Image (cartoon, rainbow over all chains, first blue to last red; front, side):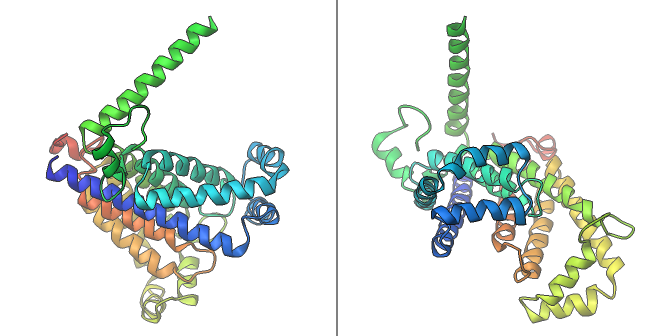
Length: 161
Length: 175
């Protein structure tokens, strides 16, 4: 591996750690505010759709007919998923998988806030950051994926590390 | 028929996965960074919509001068607030042109990948400036500007303009 490639791997590792930190800091903040409860999820979508005027009609319909039918269940899922994604990205383990999940999560936020009062580019930045981490095996530098690679070699199926 | 479609889709998917793996394993991951560079270039150009000359105001909503006033009212650093209040606001037209031209230059540089390091350096300064100025403004999320600054730092230290960019025509990438 050349010096240029080592530098690039470290640069994307830094990006991975930053995205992981953002997820964990936000997760802790949400936990403190009670977002990961049935009422918290309903309040969150009310805030996004009404206070922030976000979400296209089709998106609101989907959320109303899915997540908001089972907000308690979704709250638990969201709490666990955000924590796992944050930890996986921070420590660089199963990075492509965790980053792919984070990309979908951030893109969902983009759709939720789209067309509203929020600065939408925040969610573009988050989505692109997670996507770049997912596409660049960012756990192989400063991450546990490098240990997995040394021990197990290239992943047998898919893009696990 | 459906089975044939399934096979075709399945083969295409496997091809895509193999392509991505090949790209990532054989080379340093520069092309995803080049993709991000172009998207962030669009971000800067898009942000010009609400600070267009001659009045630097959008048809509706906050314009550049409103944001500068917010930076003064909610200054996280008193020295910065004082600078905006005593230097930038009294010379608004000059500063508005400087900001407009700088953002235009950064946007075009990053979108096209031309003189990317210079564009990235300028963009880094602009992002840090935004982060400092808007840190305590209600409703602003500091991580947005931290990410923006980090991305420009990333473009500065990589050859982000040499893949899918004009810089690659002048100095081909090692890849």
